[in-house]
Length: 577
Image 1 (cartoon, one colour):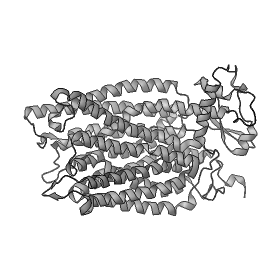
Image 2: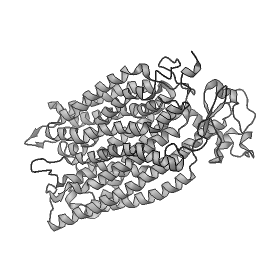
Image 3: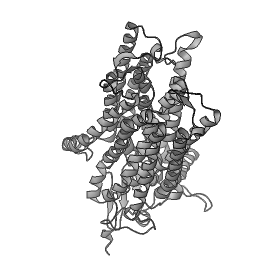
Image 4: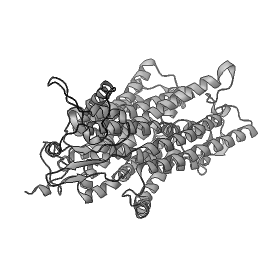
């Protein structure tokens, strides 16, 4: 069989054998993956959307404690992928890391369902009022939550990158399909989130928490069965480096050791393997760039003894530069992730105080308003992919329509407008409270919950640009052998953003509540000043936007090539970013 019938990017099947391009990968393989993503997002958002309500109504935690605990758990879910990605890139590969982690995830969901439904594991309630949970009940509940966080650590960074692996970068048709992959991948994710915020939240508050958590648990199990049915169609990236993260360490160490050496006048004088090495190994060579020049010293040619480690190559140095450059972009995604954390914490607490009636007999759960974030995403993704990208592609010549960093920048601007609107709405809510002399936390403010709608919709539209853009950016710009680890720049940014929100909430509460003063974020939201806190976040967003513009101007996109027997295939001659 001719070699052209096989994939050109070196992907293999589960046994390590080359795979036929016609029978594997593409959307045919991804169809088995998107089901899992939808159910996993349904499970996550089914917990995250209403967790602050469960903690305050069932476990009797105060506002600051409940917000902190939600942020800490959500942050852990997004931070643990660093470990899962390292294991995948260095040891097990994406498929087997995902397999082991998904089982842990399901165990966590089963335990959580038990924690809210088995009589001895949950607080006793009478007439809608629950007694204080015992220490053992609290311990079991949080053990369940953090078991899910451990499982998510191995599934989250590997399932999306595994999906992207199903497209061959060296096949022009598949490469074009891959441009749309992350848009439609996140579309499936948003679909799961929509069912969670619309359906599961209502079920939890009206039919029982056990049923509300049991449904996504069963769905997750079914989706895993579907995932494994698709195994024969999957393509797997062959690992070409034993421990890719160790190369980064070597570059830093060698650059420091050679700090007193003088760099050659031209990059061609730095150490690099010849073309035959890249043909034999199938690795992609990365072209030299002029940024972070101090790292180039790791590739200065010099005599070494046989017992000493080999010299670093230009490609290895450029991989380190990529990680360093991505880190600068990652830092300016933290504040946007902090803004995103408000959707399932303070926005929900804010919504609980408002008039939630929709018609004479139906009352909307406050957390269900988060469904409008998802709805706006679901509407915007097809519009973005089918209309905006082709229109901009004609204007710019960029296959993606706009660069990845331009996409992020648009999202951050929209998000800044969203928090400005949140501030304005909260100012109005406080004015209504003053007019009606409302003091107690259980009193309903005579103001419709739909006043919060614009901030939710704008955050949903912003996520089409920045959430999908971040995932694609960090996957696309990562070194070839570190794409799972690279994707964790996206997940860890969200995680750190949640932890940062916890820190800010606690810092603001303690600072503003000193000496008997009224805290901005008190237990009684009707007697607090969330408007001041939102104003504070707005200032941070504007300053972060300026920092992002500065970082994006200095960023240089990855330029790599793959050597073949016939030719050198240029992968990124002009930035697609």
